[in-house]
Length: 234
Image 1 (cartoon, helix red, strand yellow):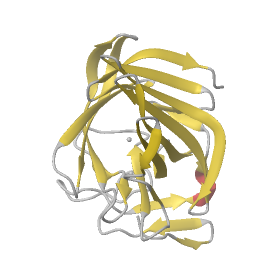
Image 2 (image 1 turned 90 degrees about the horizontal axis):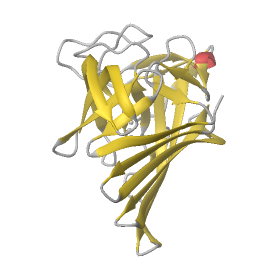
Image 3 (image 1 turned 90 degrees about the vertical axis):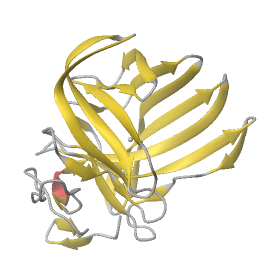
Image 4 (image 1 turned 180 degrees about the vertical axis):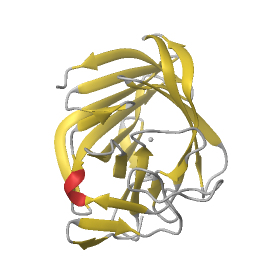
C-alpha cells in the first residue's frame, strides 16, 4: 500500500523532505518529480473516514484471491498513536499455498478537509510453516528517521507522483497516477471510473500496478483481484 520526524507549531506540522507538493496542502512539484514535502494541519487528521477510493471505517473488509492464495484487508476497531497522530489500524492477512504467509498492521489517518489519506507505517509478521520468521519492511513514522507519506490523494490527477512512505533503507515506496477513468472487471463486479496507480520504490527495482474503484477501494493489487466486499463499518 508509505520518513524524518515532523515539527509541530500552532497546530501545524510540516514534514520537510526534499521536494514539492500539490493542491490539498501540498506545494506543487516540478513535472516529473516525486512529491516529498507535506504540510498537514494536525487538527484535520482523523482515524476514520473515507475519500473516493479508500474507506477507513472499522469493520470494512475486502477479500482478494489469486489462484489458491488469499489476501484479506480489514479495517480494525483498533487505533494507535504514531508520530503524535491517532491512526487507524488496517490489517492485511495473506496466505500462500493454503498457509499463512504474512500479517501486517498498517497505520492510516485521513484529512477530513482534503480527503488525502496518509500512511504512518506498518508492523509486519512474516510466517514460515506456521511460525513467525521475520519482520521485513516494518517501519513507523517518527522512528529512525522515517516519515509518513501520502497513500491516496483526495482528488487524484493523472501524472501526479508522490512518496507513500519514506523509511531510509527500509521502505521508500512511491506511486504515480496513471488514470482515473478506467473500467475494470473482477470477481466482485464491474467498475467504472477506476483509479489506476503504478507503484515503485526508490531502493528496489520493478513496479506494481493497483486499481481502486469509487466507493469500494482497492479492487486489484497486481495478481490479486477482489472477490468479496463486507461493508460492516459505518
